[in-house]
Image 1 (spheres, rainbow, N blue to C red):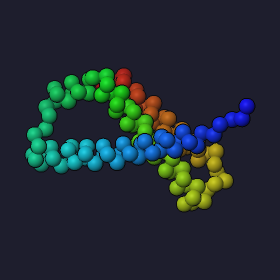
Image 2: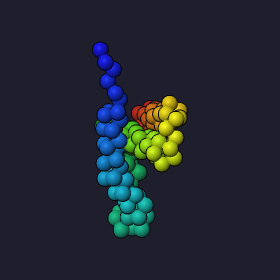
Image 3: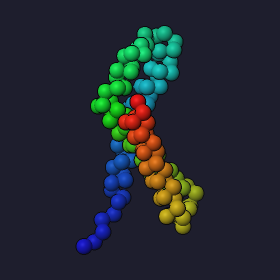
Image 4: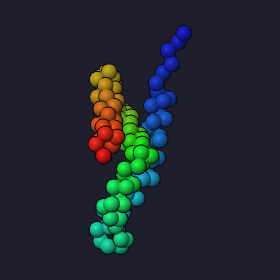
Length: 117
């Protein structure tokens, strides 16, 4: 039986992470970086944010967002090294660094979101 390539799955993670990052990061930056500090919108109090972050569905959604954003970075950085810097001869090391870094970052995000909060 022939071994299936991982490339379509990695492109799926790349595109999902890019879409979520493009939709959510600007909104969060606007709210927490401008609107709340400048008083344009009244910020939620600590108890409300704690209640929202304490819900398991919110934690799983944030974990999924972190994982997809990390794999988006890994795939984009891998191709920047391959095509931009012409380092195709270091394929194994680049794959290990990029996707291993995404997996390690996902593990840290999982620990912080699911165990600590």
